[in-house]
Image (cartoon, rainbow, N blue to C red; front, side, top):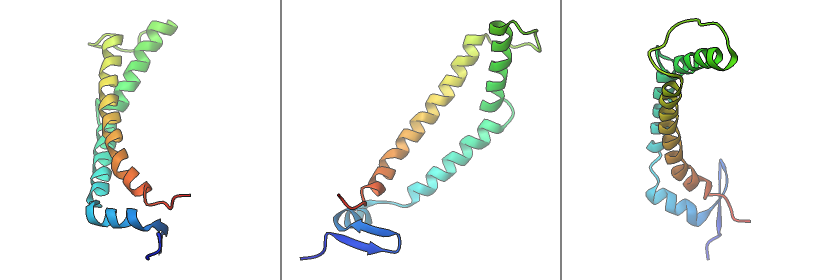
Length: 113
């Protein structure tokens, strides 16, 4: 009978889970996560990206909520600005949730206690 665990350079793993991963897990999904994250970060930092949108929302909110003086104009209303940001964040959350499944598959390599 084979051992229920296998020793690797990266820890002791559950043998059955490792065999399953070796047959079905595509490690390229991890590189795809890196690429998607890079695209999101680059987009968030570009002109009119999420960073700029948050700064504009702060400027408008600060004026409306805190009574600060006007420091520029906006074509969008405060709720429209918030909605645009929420839509972008929801897309990001959906992407991140999609990453959970492959990461959980790797987590399942842990030895049951």
